[in-house]
Length: 405
Image (cartoon, rainbow, N blue to C red; front, side):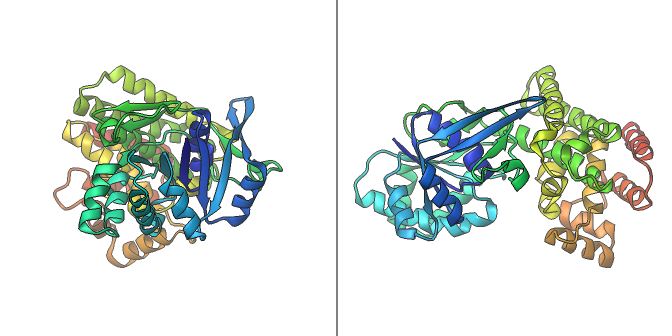
């Protein structure tokens, strides 16, 4: 059995490749980094080092090889004959790989391979599977699009494992080494999988899937963002350092408490189990050995401030169920305050605020208009951050606003 993974980066090698290999699949990585591909082909394996508190242990992922993404003919050949596929390339690269996948599927159908090809879309966005599916369809004829829907499963998932972007320090002498936490569950939307489920280690099918997608985005990603934007204010390089600051940990934990109540109401779930998941997240965020950077989590603030994304989406769900998200509002204000010279979205956002003011900015980017219940709170918190008020003052204001919405 052969699996193909488009993208040999942190999640591709540090999570999906491991699960596929341990499920007795040959793993073929496609990546633009030719040096990395050459090393995979030379060694046919790579190490993953798991880090947890003071305990580190290492495994080897075997039965792997690679294809350079520029060798389009070879890429098409590998995908067309695969038994399983995944992508982990980032949203911006999906339009680049879509026509190649379309060509590979076209060849697969010409080869009369009857078995469906399921593509697990491991991208950090809601409905990434549908998005990639639309991109692929755009390169197919009407009749081919019908075949595509009948024979290709665009599988939705949400990735919960923390895998940092590797640096020479983390690689520790081996350019193929990946550092990761040991969280291993791979949830998938059963309704998006075509045919009989393949036996993939730690892959868990759920239906309906909306709760698991929202839990990842509105809890994991939201809390990540809150801690990162507050950590940036203190010029902290690492997310783990930020979450160990008592005031940041407090704000993040209260933001998680707010969304936990909202999630429990929205999906009729047990609140205690969701709160336990929140506690687990705070513990995992504190893993200093992972080296997750504040800059990496905070980058692209415009996307993360979108009305349905991690901050505003979580806040909206809370408001829907009568929970005033005062501490999530701190994260929203901090995201607007965030400004980094090397972050293009941050520059665009900062320039807009300078020209048009914060009021117009929150309306434009987050849909916080004049009648929105969070408007005055976000404006007040943003101005306090700009005036360099202490986190203690910020907390006091957030909690006052929560009691007097």
